[in-house]
Image (cartoon, rainbow, N blue to C red):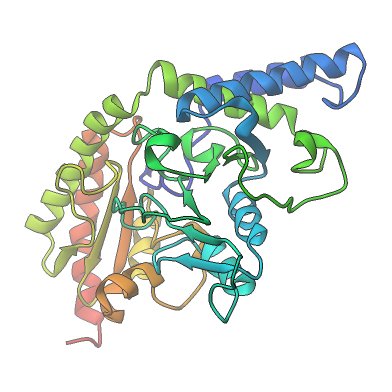
Amino acid sequence: MVYLDYAATMPLLPEVREAMHKAEGEFLANASALHTPGHLAMNEVEKVRALMAEIIGAKPEEIIFTSGSSESNNTVIRTFEGCEIETSDLEHHSVLETARMYRSESGRSEGRPKLYSYMLANNETGEILKLPAKGEGEYLHSDLTQVLGKMPINVDELGLDYATFSAHKIGGPVGVGALYVREGVPFKPLIVGGRQEKGRRGGTYNVVGIVGFGAALKKLKSCNTPVSYATLVSKLRNLLAQRILAEVPGSSLNTDIGEGKSLPNILNVSFRAAEGESIQLYLDAEGIVVSTGSACAAGDIKPSHVLMAKTGDAEVAHSSIRFSFGLENTEADVDRAMEVLPKIIDKLQKISTIA
């Protein structure tokens, strides 16, 4: 199998699997318990909290563990229920749909704060975006799910009040995430009913999952720095882009692969007169795993809202494929993809009803 869907989820790292198996045997107690096994479990949670804070330039007490980015996004946006909430059209559905539900329809009310929620890099195209400036009584949230490990992050330099992360995008387990909340900013818990996370997120700690997240963060910090990651992965991404443009008629890039324009691992491509889901299924039959966009939108027959916002062209949006790379990929993976992709596109274009 050639796996080119790292933006959807990164396969579990061996170091993470080993750390989680060890934690299953050693940290058996509820981390909120007052006995020694509970303290030992909480110590592991706090180690990961400190590491996460160090990597993004935050204080440990500003990190809250969640079940993932969707929960984190929901938590921030629902904090501003009834306020003005501004987002871009390129955001993940967990931002767009939540903002639509909880924003004030009449705009900003006097004396009420405003939230900006803008991702730093898009999950479908990899485009690096500009964050808005905030004024008095305004707060800035960014979904950094795709950014962690791909670009250096410093929440102070970015001017962020809130930031969202997910473990499985860096080789950690699914079902664990983190939310950065700057000290002193508005906050309302999404999940209540317990005093965990200093009353900011109720529920028993997922100690094994958090330990796995920590192992992924350690790997990121020690071996997989954003700079080395970008150098190695962008080489493969750019090679695939160049070969597609040269070898596949009717292809066009939706990702700007110029230096500093996009994340190094994502390549979004449209193929004229070839439907994206058909391309994905044909590639899957050949053992090549890709995506048509955000995995959270899989099964939605509507065109990508990201590409519609960028191009306004439904044909481009319907004919797009997202390739995304990790450090485990090689040039042989690119060769294998290009061995079958031109034939698949040619076949689909010949049976297409689009001129």
